[in-house]
Length: 390
Ligand SMILES: *Cc1c(COP(=O)(O)O)cnc(C)c1O
Image 1 (cartoon, rainbow, N blue to C red):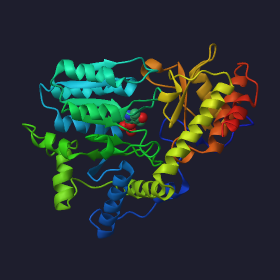
Image 2: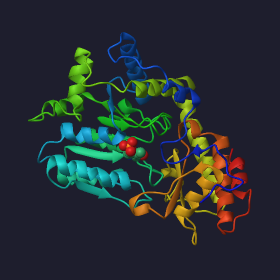
Image 3: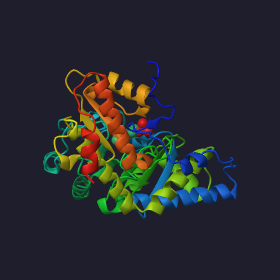
Image 4: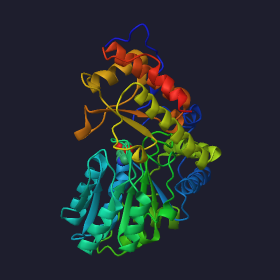
């Protein structure tokens, strides 16, 4: 589709991550390169690590791996899971379902699963039942914010169960860190993985990983610990944390951007930032409802505050709607993945884009686009309802 007369050359990305980022972070990526053994770079890397610990609310170790967030999620299994280990995978959406492949690959068998419909969240009492029944689960994986469904899982309760049953928890907090409360130590999460390109407001390109002492121990007791591998967390610990040598050349520009993004998170404060995300999420939900659109998650209590998942109304094609919003109005939202593809659209309000004006803009473009595509909405109803929510 050609851009229409009303299209804008600026593009506002409010997809499910990456999203548009603040100019301060953008300019940080453009800083002059430092040699990765320059003491100035070491100081920057240490500062980034320290800030990340604060955002993860942990006094334990954090590792910044280069690659995408999925690399960190796989590394957790690659480093800890032994052949024959019994694993429990919790599935309430596409990312939860996807984790089974790592458990399968490294343990050599199918994981046990607790599964719910993709508009629901995991019930901790079901997890307890399985832990009791099986008796020897060693690992539990869960997703905090199931981005493709716009839902949340009760990570605090599930991590407590993991502790009680002496299992190691692996938490995918890729989309929530920096926008929702992710208190790693308080939860007792063993490996918690986040991405820079969602609520933290930076670019994709690293896996941010909090590692507990229990998790390091699980890596050490592995009969053939993973070494000399891009996936090895132990390499990072022994080379970088203990000998101040990097396993390979470090992604200098990525650290520049990530550091700036983390600095901005801490300047704003975790509390106010979490509140900002939940306020704009509420606005977005009210806006969708104001347009008579249905929200995908089964109830308000389980809705994630980084992304709003909206059911596509009868007679509207999700792809066409998303394309139209982008090409005509310059607002980039997204559909969903796998089983949910075509059934949902998602508005990402993460990091810098978790602001009232951007959400109003997205809702306005959504109203106009629905109207353009022949769906009966009354202009202003969505935006008006969103405004009234504040
Ligand atoms: C985005 C996302 C991922 C994948 O992150 P990549 O950067 O693509 O590796 C994993 N889990 C959740 C919940 C996500 O939102």
